[in-house]
Length: 104
Image (cartoon, rainbow, N blue to C red; front, side, top):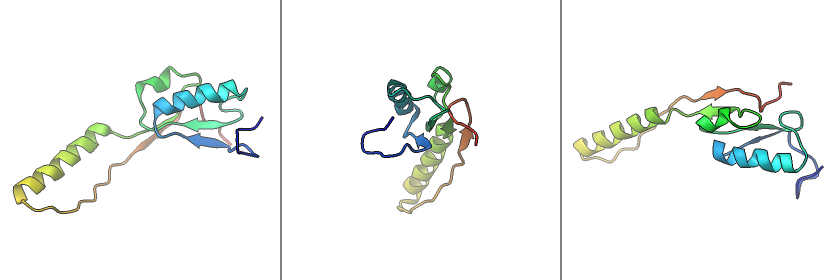
């Protein structure tokens, strides 16, 4: 089975977010393919939906509250200093493995 425009299936898809990954699961199943046997799938944002999809979706946890805290801090600093200064803030992410990824 082929996807339009692909002569060979990739081994995995990484989706922009978990909601889109849910749609990808449906489309992959409609093509008669199995996750993770034929294709691994990973989402991004580790939403609650991951545990309710079939198979349960592996995802990347982004820690949105931490991102928001750092953004507010940076904005506050710029407001009180009255200087616009670029800031590089690194927030670690975590891979949460569930059933949608095949181990090699």
